[in-house]
Length: 440
Image (tube, rainbow, N blue to C red; front, side, top):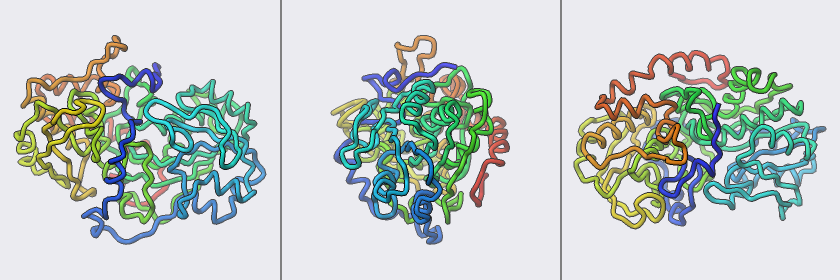
């Protein structure tokens, strides 16, 4: 298996899949009002695993030396971090905090971390876990004397969003040191339906380390159960000594994040709203092309385009009348990343009904149509990885999607190609699911 760290995966021409430079304008999008579809769902307040653990006085973590993997998304309803609350409670013996990409407090940008340091607020030791392989993570846990590993990070539901692979690395390290593993669970912001192609072993990397589908349809707690049952014995020699998931209360698999009543904290700088998460498993694939995926705008992954794109693309996409989504002709000028400072024609993707919207189908239709309309359309080519130069292959898990679209395949043919592998994955994951509601 080949793994690439984030620094290797980022290039100046096109940024990698998860972490991106912040834009001050992103906060404007984050302040947008309730989504238009909110009235379609019942008002069903949701309680996170962290909130339940806090309400019980952190008793689930008492009597253990605790190492916490978290970032700014690890908050309670009072908007304070779980680390600050645990520390001030005196009920948890925190021996170390482990910061992923962007860092524990979120001060670092794309492909970077905060380094090892003492946290000025709590005085706790913060270890740099970004890009750590199993050996390094194991060493960090041993140095800190960790007996229980706690994971509390808001995921966004896409295979190429790398926090889930930080969790898997930590699980492997926990096996090595004999530590208990506790997940403070949070909702999957795009729901519980599995969608898209399977990762294949030759194409694994830092944006897809194991064989799961592109939109896995699980919470991080469910994923931890899946990883423990399906992968750890082969990769780490054994399953976890103990895996505890402190579950989300009140969440159904068919309820999007925007109507949970929970505050949204940006998991990374270009994931400003729950609407961004809805489209990301699909439009994130445009990172593998020469079209802008909207980085450097206030609507990343919802705005997609390039200087060579005109109004025809939006017209063709709108005419498809895809369920749960509309396409608006749009023009934008990115402040960073692809086509910086240039006027890009393209579309804004407007999700009108998450229950019928398929981000993968919509994005495949966008790719097929863009390739058919514009001779300037191209797949991103990474010369630093000559054996696997196409970024789209790492994002989608194989060469199949790229070669099909390049050969002129229809969206039906592209989507149909992964039907069997998706069905097999969906059947396999059922035993690890924790929450009710539609899963198909």
